[in-house]
Image 1 (cartoon, helix red, strand yellow):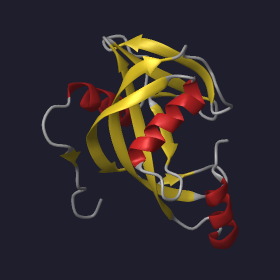
Image 2 (cartoon, rainbow, N blue to C red):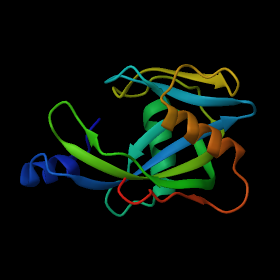
Image 3 (cartoon, rainbow, N blue to C red):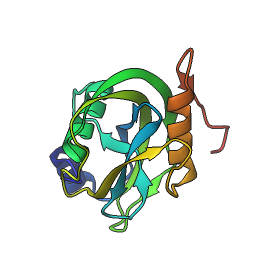
Image 4 (cartoon, rainbow, N blue to C red):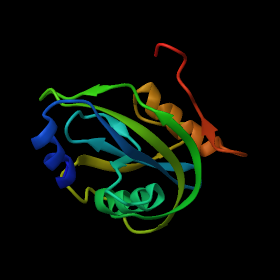
Length: 160
């Protein structure tokens, strides 16, 4: 389901007001390839993304979203990057901003396929042969794949 029930409940109370939500990006790697989904709503290719359920650890969200969206079992290797997205305004007027946890995940098992209605395609792509993606998603893939050392923590400059 694209919008979790707890968000629908919140929206019934707050309307289109800004929501601050914890989200994840799961960059699933298998050798020299990465798992991507084509979003059904925008047609954009992205890594697997999702919203944490109340009380759910972001690493568990990454694993859950991979299985729900692609049928792939993944294991979190590390938290590569924590950042804050730009404000997202959806076509219905809802406004949201996410604290994104970008995890590098390792493929464990499963045949990648469209497993829910959030994606229209699912596929493995070579790290040097990614389909057209927005720059923030390309940066998440590149950061997760190349990450070594402490978690990358970005803070926006004053006024951003």
